[in-house]
Image 1 (tube, rainbow, N blue to C red):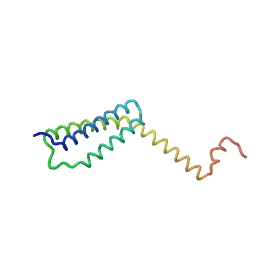
Image 2: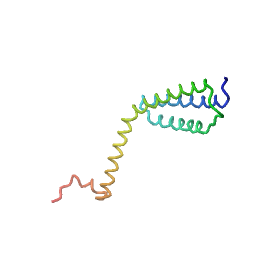
Image 3: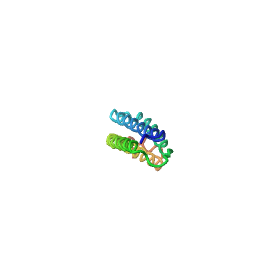
Image 4: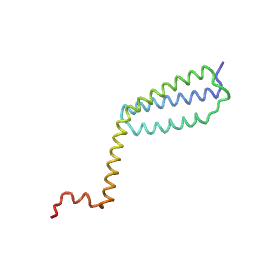
Length: 122
């Protein structure tokens, strides 16, 4: 059975997601987090397009096998990206927690709380 135009479009979208996640993985290896975020936006757009596709009936066996292979590759990329990005995300989280704590101290004790640390009042 030959693939229908809709099936070819769906497989092409999965292929594009697979390409983008591969590029995201490369960006993660290079610690180019801004590029990774840009690529993720494109990936999300492709996924939205996939969600909007309706296939009349089931995919052909050939299209289904292509889709499964692409999904496996996408999931492999995702797993590796998470391994590389998790330490960075934890560091960002720590920095945000520290900044939030500082803001709470400043709100509680006023903006001069940190500026009198070196003065000696008796």
